[in-house]
Image 1 (cartoon, one colour):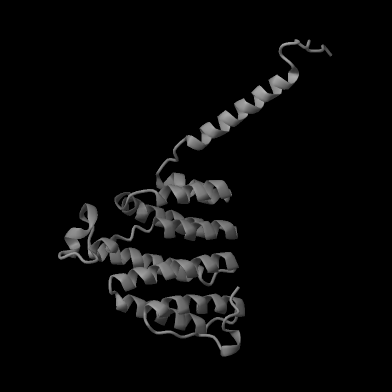
Image 2: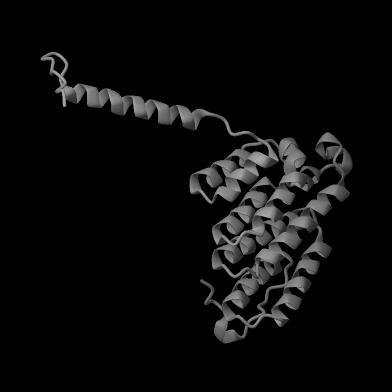
Length: 225
């Protein structure tokens, strides 16, 4: 095997440094490339179960305007439902995290507005904003009884987000509906770990509905992981 001659003014250590520097530049260049902002691109990231790709997708939608998030919402929710069918718990958790981050919170624009419908962007209506919340609630309630504790905790946090939105816009009926759903769910749950997370969600929503309480026996309260 031939030996590469060493040049006194260009030691091999310099070559190694150049290679390392080139690698860093290439890596940095990849990070600067923007992510495609399409439902299919986001779904591909979520289904990859790759932490970096999932977090990048979530960061991307969090930086979008309300208008862009609203435009993506329906198609992305459908993709998240498909991702949720996976046997991979992390993928299911990622679907919940992503759609919670994408949620455009259209109704927030109406707070304090003299004409709520006119305060919404791009021709959206109050009814459509309410449908978003209803669809998210149904998705989160499903995730709240998932076999994976990571998914349940994420769903409980996401339900709190909906409760905050409902309280802010004065949608007391929505808060009461969520509480009723949680009460009904709790009656059919035998797994104590699942029941703890349902109770956590109930407490979060009840706080914003000004109806503090718990669905658990006293001995189990406060033991949520």
